[in-house]
Length: 294
Image (cartoon, rainbow, N blue to C red; front, side, top):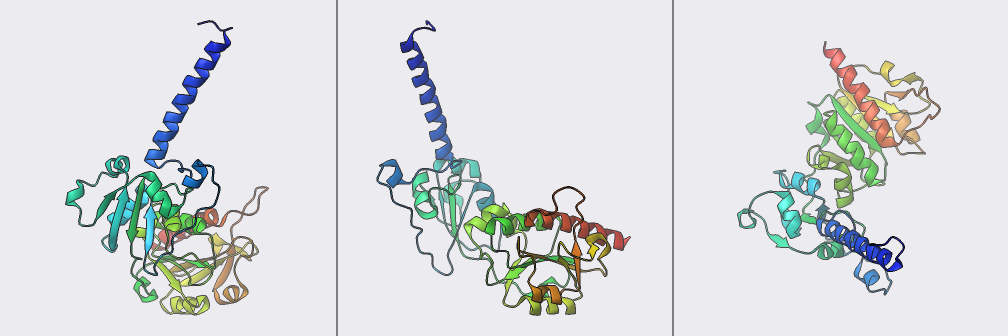
């Protein structure tokens, strides 16, 4: 094949384009990259409109998220929609052996429910929300996390994952200005939603008062806190309280917590994403709790 022959070059380009297309199509079949919406593929334009959900209807997606939900005995499963390829990767046995309906679908079928940008990996689970928990159930836990109107489900999901990693007893948040249980939250939590209570309360100040009665010492994370978090702990039960990025803790919350504390950062950057700050604070709290037992 001559390097100077333009026809040979075009042939090579066509061959590599075909290979790239095959790899891309295989990834779409596995749900690893989004499938373009049908309107876009036909060049008709338009936007995807999410279907209306019933109040008790939740769609979870992604292999790890769905597998964790299926393993959670508290989950009420309605139906599993899965591509043939994803069913093999899910590896939960034969279709006929499942205690819930299983529907073999195409990636485009799942896109219809979740939208073309959801990285669903070829699996979607229709389910009911997890049972509601109350604060009294937390009295045996030495560490809980309280979120003051953190609205981004990606951040809350990442925080939930760290909370499970450091063995926190629950993640508590407000009913308003906080994400409800959803596919985005569950996917961001990467299975953690099934492993830790996610409690939504009406009034955060009242909830902190209830936690105090249960023996929790509340530490509010604040960049202007008078002391570093390592010097701010006391007692054998800690409730870490974090606010939204930018505005931080609300004034009422700042007035209600037992103490305000900061994360000391000696470097040039003095602020962190709230999920990163949560992970560091959880580590510091866990170290304190372990040392207080010694």
